Length: 346
Image (tube, rainbow, N blue to C red; front, side, top):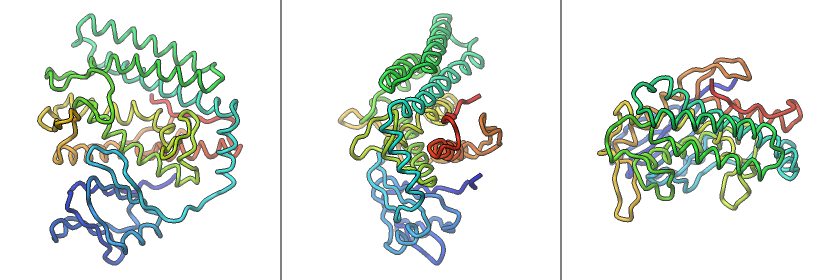
């Protein structure tokens, strides 16, 4: 199993990254704020207008370290990476599977079923741990939504076309996010959730979810590229210029357990409050700089938590689950596995 390495997150607008020997150094206003050996780094993610020296970019490209640039809300802007290498035969198999409707449906079936099961698990966990604190109406609504997600997961298991599975995925998301407000246990109208909104997020919970999804997307894309897969060509998400469709596919089964649960924990444990967000004139909402740093620390800590992978039977950090899934997808496309074993959280 791949060894988990660190990701450097740069949040200061005026930061400058440079190379010093075999280290990456982060400076702010000419003062060194941190350094790390290149061989211990998996990626560099900067938010805003942080710059980097050509020498560092060249060293990162040579070492296979991707440097990604995101806006303050976490929206992807650009990335710097070295020459693509790996197994061209595997990528050709990936493209053939994308053009083979029954083969693509087999992969999508696993993704949609696992995502729906993981959404159901989040609702079940809330009912189990906090059901007595819910109003009778909220508890009944959560139980009904759990039953609907169970039904959708069962229908997804026997669906045989991608379009039908996309419809089931959308149906599951509608039921899940309709219940999300009941999972927030903080009595603050400013932290209410009125439904999923993006580009820009229109409330604080959506801003937090979008930021965490951006972090998860970076990790999923890196995992796919590590295992020689093309992140642009997916199965659940249709091809679109500039969209990493396969990275979005891989994210789906991990969103509920890796991002949504962390968002709920940060809010319910009062690690984030209404004051940690900025409401812009145009109506969009984003995290403050200080809050973003706290979220990044919590994200890294969550990635270090260990779990037992349900298919592999191995204990690994949560941060390596996306790599395990990318590896198994590659094995399926090579013909080593009959199907793609999507991740189901237990």
